[in-house]
Length: 262
Image 1 (tube, rainbow, N blue to C red):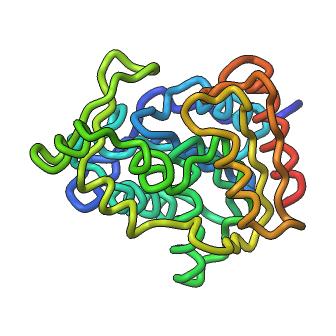
Image 2 (image 1 turned 180 degrees about the horizontal axis):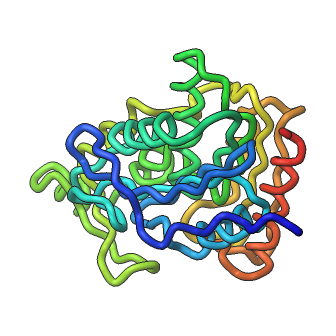
């Protein structure tokens, strides 16, 4: 009789990280486990994260996800967050809940967090990350995508108010970009030279992405070891990559990575 897959947690547990109440959902299971890292102003109950949770449960595989401070079910104000803040929270959650080998799956800003996590974990002697799957990756987006496109009005808002707001295609609330986020982003850049992840990387990038151009993914690929990176371009894929066919591609990529790393 087949074993019953572990249930997907329907309520989060909370981990205090430097005074922030971080919401976490974690299912135990086989390794390599899967760790989901969401995007800027997204949460761990989005379509891609839920699809991965269902797949991991059906496979009996460990799955971990959390909301950054100011996101989803976690505490804190969104405008107080920076890459360093969300990186520190992600590392704390990873170290508290994971055991054994892990695959990081990062979407948009989550890909930046994933690349920085690998750097910090390796620096501490932790080699448990055995694969990366990155969707519409946006590492260094503050310096590479936001700063070059700043209007004079936005520059003035940053100087005078410490932030500027932009309408969002994904939420009724505007995106807030703070001076602290942009300045801290410069301290977390990963695309300034070769990136040695010490593990295979699979990138999924839509060619119809209006937010992160495919040229950004191609630049990232050029900085990764050629023998360890796979780039899948989706001709009609947008930034969300949440259509059924996109989700199928994501699950295949993660499944292949898990089989390769087992």
